[in-house]
Length: 188
Image (spheres, rainbow, N blue to C red):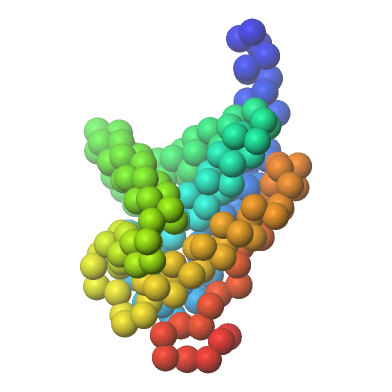
């Protein structure tokens, strides 16, 4: 049993790396920073990685509910990879060993809070998701229309990811929604 778990984790390391790499690449799309005004800071970049991690974990959670147990294991592997990356980035920024554990713990707690808020926003009335995004991504200071535009992107990305088979996701193939028009402009 223990060896089976160990081999499964090793087998999922490469796919989790591909999935994590794809979500980070999407989180770095300049559209979020230039057009929507997501702060191009360490915090703003964390918010976009957290949002895209939420999207992937949400999709994997649906696959698990649909009877695909490997989805939960892949989700855990992606989560572990994300926080190993956060740990590495904090170290590169010069945070000492004593501060790393505390900061990573706070980031994990923050991700869980965002997951809860985004799930509630997706299930709740119009405007709830935009409020959660404004509060988290924009620290309550979103440009006019930016949080609703990001909410449209998030909802559309949930739909795009829902169409991708688990096998494709395991292969690192993700598809997020194309960016919507930013406030005050025509579709890109």
